Length: 66
Image (cartoon, rainbow, N blue to C red; front, side, top):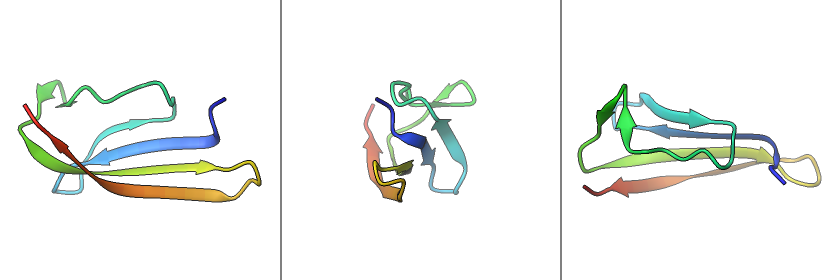
């Protein structure tokens, strides 16, 4: 089951959203505006409501390696 109000965003180092989805099975393919992104560090932000209807936020970094 997909958590309620699920939302994932990935940002580049300039703060631009390079990917966002509210579908838990939709994954980022490493592109932005149709262009493959270079090896770099990106920030992710995941928000959802748990079984107690409390907003949960998870954030961190990921490294894209080509």
